[in-house]
Amino acid sequence: MTITQAVKNQRNPVKRVTKAAGLALAGVSVALLMNPAPAMASWQPATIGHTAVSLRDCYHPFKAAQPSQSCTFLKYVPAGTPVNIICQHIGQDIYGDAVWDYISYSGGEGYVADYYVYTGYRSWIPGVEVCNY
Image (cartoon, rainbow, N blue to C red; front, top):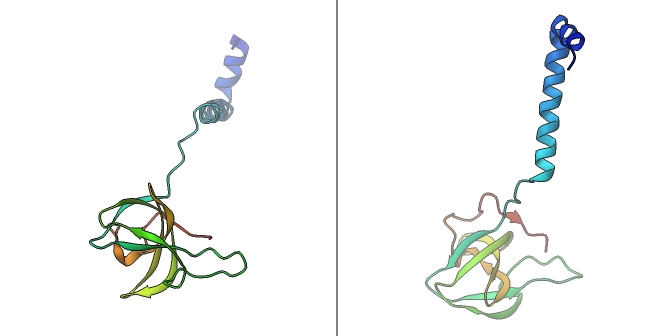
């Protein structure tokens, strides 16, 4: 900055503050582009409860079916199995809990009744998305 510019900036403090703020914001924008924040995972780690639970396929391309015991049975997930809950969906009420969890684990993926899963929450898990499938 030249001496003339410095004198002009001293006479106009608003211009000086605005220019400094603009430079600071530009620096933040460049920093964000170069180092974007990591994506937040919406899944939640959990564990299958004391009994094996039925893993269900509730995807029907021509009908928006809610998860239930009438969905296609895939396999049993053994008790104590660690899983990741990808999303949750309202479905058939199982002992007062109408939430179903779409899980992924080393043996596959599908819906299980939330009632049988230890999630750390009574039903809906904060931050976990509602399933669109």
